[in-house]
Length: 552
Image (tube, rainbow, N blue to C red; front, side):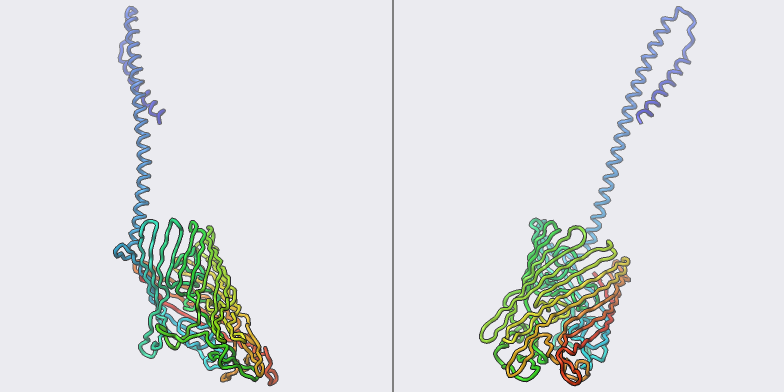
């Protein structure tokens, strides 16, 4: 740039010089030589001065050009910064427009309205939540009939209230409910008046500087798989329609007090004290009696060993329901990591089983360990999740609700070993369509006993002396059929056919195949009962549809 300006200046100077030379008359006499030389010297000095002035002008022009370039760069950067600020402001305004504000507290509404249908090849008498451990064998009439229902009861409402005490301290409260409660007065004869039920109600406090997070209230159990970290509302459930999740999925929703520590939102360690409850299997055919079934002669005392382990519901509970005896909470400890690719977690569960017999209180311990993995196999396109758990006395933490414990001959509780596994793929075909494929299994080990009291008595869970000879004969009562394995494969999709200013509306469909297999028990061989000769099975084909509108 400088050389171009200098060239222009020189050219201009030469033009002036030529003009002056041509304008001067040619010298006529030698006597005027001195005068001419003096005149030329003056002109040269004038040209030098003019050249210096032009050079100064060039420098000035060059400085102006550089300054203008700096101004252009600064202006471009300023414009870019303003554009970013405008975009951030627009995003903040849009985010704020999704919330209600009251006395400095931001309130976010959520939930959906649902219109759904269920078809089952074998009648469970269930609404949108399937009862896998009640898939009927062929000895009962419903094992030969199908069912179809329509329901809106999975519709859900939620509200999140959030407030910042200071830049480091954040408080929140969350409530979520649906209409899957079934009080004694609820029916679908005419008005279909089903009652709301609590899903989650909890409060949280988060401290950014220390990385501590406190939760108190009812929420998903800490054993539930998270998609990232360990904070509430990041739980990752299978994306199905059936309100009872795929067998093998470990979860519970219950009151708890939880404390979590994070290190840079990359590593997490949490402990949770959670509400205890025990599910029992008594023995043999008498599933609700205090006396075990008898395989061959003899009786056990009607009182004594089974004095108390369950109590009838009292104030605040329906009297037809029972509560297990528990005197300390379930304890969950969990570690999670988000190293940059995927989410990984491991956890441990500790439980106490409690009953009273022979005039004394007794404790029996159980629990288990588990893990979970979430991986984006193809970023924003294909996700894979896996979770599993193994232990004893963990049945109630699985979707099939297999029993936690049975009873030993002396009346003490005996936890049952179980393992559960779940895996699944979710394909985000585009911004409007998700397709999923999941499979899971829950399996219990037998916990059987043989006692002698005026004969042989079969006790426990999965005893080969239990009578299964009539499980495949309609009308027969000879069917104990203790469940050994339940597994399921399911596939479905969600199509978001509207996403815009007024929320989201979507349609989904799901098909699942479920198989229930029992422990081997007594079966007829040539007209004679033989232990371990009969292993009844039951299957269920289910098809669900769902229309959902998310207005918020």
